[in-house]
Length: 461
Image (spheres, rainbow, N blue to C red):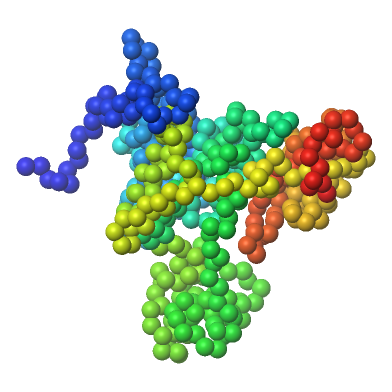
């Protein structure tokens, strides 16, 4: 009798795809109106073949949820995958991020995850990107038909959401143009709870429309940390927020530096012993300082399955997508609920764009200054692009030097004399009390120019 741990033979073609082919080859009452079942008769390619050869999917994040997503998407017929993640593998990841092994510690999560899935699923190509999501040009994201998020950061979700929504264009009566829609599927887990959300810019609420769904992060009063700590978390935050600056004035704390984290742990232990508090561990120290959300493998698997299914439905039309927010709670039994939220038509991110009215003589430098002072935008150090062309770039230095002469040129001239145009501004904006990278779509209209009056001027600067 074979050992249960023995490697099982891979299913043969087409047995591996039997269930998918059944979904894609039959009509039904719950399919999208555009669904065209393709049984692949007489040698013609099946719908699954076409999805595998045409559709490109970007997975953002290669952690606990990202590993599951790569596996599920590869086994759902997607053959052109990319994955982006800036992190390296840590020993603490191994209990739930099943694609990684002890010998992988210190290596890129994206690169190892891509390699492992390609080893197990034949015919799948996964391109890893070991970098920050902000390091990629906006055009990089334009190549994908759908973006699937496996992130644990509100700021990262917000950034990808703004990128996807930046591709969205509207017609003259503010209806979204279907060919510019970049759908997303967002997954998230916390302990035994999780969510899967479908975002179709211009149709469903985007991430920014429902930012209130995410509760504010817990913050402790400094007086409690300094005078009357009561929990292990208080001791850790004391070492992090107060003691570090006292001992290392002017030296920034790096949460990804193992020596820095060890110092915080040691100081937190001393603080806990002084006040008779137990429970300070190195893993808890990491969790408090880096705001690490507890992860459970089974929750990741369930949410990943839901996300992969929604991605499959979006690109194939074989069934209607969830509307539009699915929540899962496995703390006491299993509870799954779907809630439909309403899109904010005035959303700064997925709407037609914030209107900025300019004189024909207004220069690019004056326009950038207006973005800093605009009450809704408040974008500092903005880089500006139009139809893929860099009007002004804050960095890298070589691009800043190349585009610097444009600062003194009127926007009307840079936009080739059109009465109105859409531009994109990337810079730093405040989000939940933090300065984060933001991308905003702006509608520029020139005063007194025929055609500019066609734009809604209710939000003019």
